[in-house]
Length: 148
Image 1 (cartoon, rainbow, N blue to C red):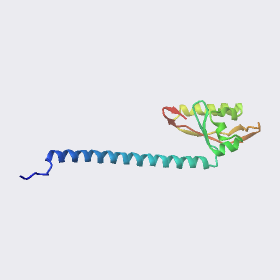
Image 2: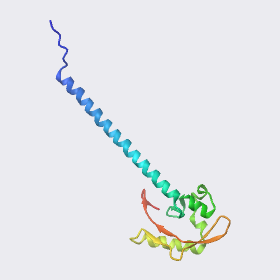
Image 3: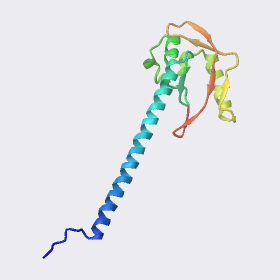
Image 4: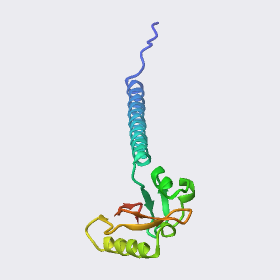
């Protein structure tokens, strides 16, 4: 009597289906990992660009609260970057410059433009109380349903 060691065709098809599913999931996971790596690389490049800029750059919320400041901004105002976060930019400007900035932001809200030069610049105030003239521009963008 001979015993066949051949597996039935439906079992082979089932095993092949399992391998195809596994291969598809592995490929999807590899694509996800590669996409995450690309996002991390992009974030690192932007962060290095942001931090190495010679101009002071501030990311503000719609109430002019500082969400992020680069090293040049911290140096300009003689305040550590961490101390600038959550502080209102209005505390670093004269009342006249606050009004100018507010007006410009309102104009951007009703304009098709997303950026504008601050005509005549701003009068800024350092942590020691000394004031200085500052040129500036304002750019607007949307992130997560909120304007910055």
